[in-house]
Image 1 (cartoon, each protein chain N blue to C red):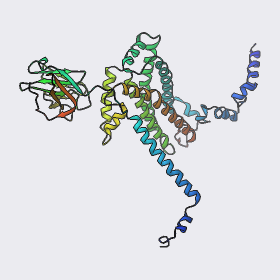
Image 2 (image 1 turned 180 degrees about the horizontal axis):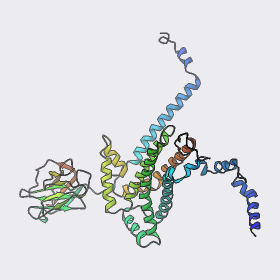
Image 3 (image 1 turned 90 degrees about the horizontal axis):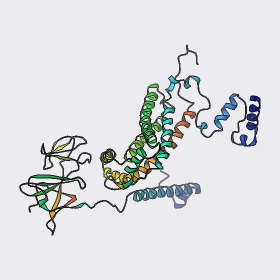
Image 4 (image 1 turned 45 degrees about the vertical axis):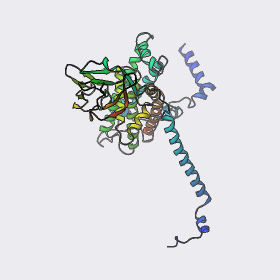
Length: 251
Length: 162
């Protein structure tokens, strides 16, 4: 029975359809493992080889991976929330309340989105502290640090734009205060505020602009920069491993 | 200096066809980029705003009891009735734009966001607000109702007498 199953699995792996999708074929040599990474559009962003000690919890505390995980949770829950949310002044608040009280699992998805957003901000900061204190930002990884700083800003902007969408008192006044802070920029401050809000006050245009920024522009920009962020780790020789003193064995 | 005096032919020899085309190409890309910038700026600035009119009718003067401060939260205006007459005060905090509230028991205007305090003339008493609350232009219309223009501030101590 088990042999039969193995036979069918082997047959499947040899089939033309399977080989057209997964080209590297069988075998557990280093070459095959490398090909499995290189022939996969998602995996090829990552390094082909990792040092074993870099995969241990202590090396990175998995902070970058966990940040990516919260981002995935946010994308999935966010897309589901979009199915019930209208970004318009008469409906936004009521839709948010519907998600809490009328939609099946709505409150679960909304809270998951909210907690993941908080967790992502926390993890981004923790990741940056870890990278900083381990010295993983140093040559040749300076530019990846810069990309990371832009990703931090995008994370904060995603939080900020998402904050307006429930359209309650808290979000309304938070964005009023925030947009007035933007208008403190010298010379063009009030122009920046006008473009950001699409008007002179936090109103229907501002809600729509923040919605488009929150659901389209900022996530797409973040995904693009994340792809570069991961790809550069590969190009800089995998996760940063500090040189150990010569007396210690390389694990 | 051999470069200084050259015939046009000599100048033409120095720029090859390839360099010329590169220059034309780069210039057109720069022009297109600038045009895209202008296009984006214009597109993102709304030409028509469906915002409430800055001019507000706040009703007959006798709505307001003597020596009172009345907030209309919808329009963010205080109508203040003094012994000398009426004036309108913006209720929007000059710090970061929150809606302030009048505290009758203390006789002051206070902002809930960051704790700025103003007296009933709009003068700052405490808090982070950098400026006093502006006095807004106020006048009586032909029907004897008070009108306020929220977009125009006036010098303080200009009371409307009825």
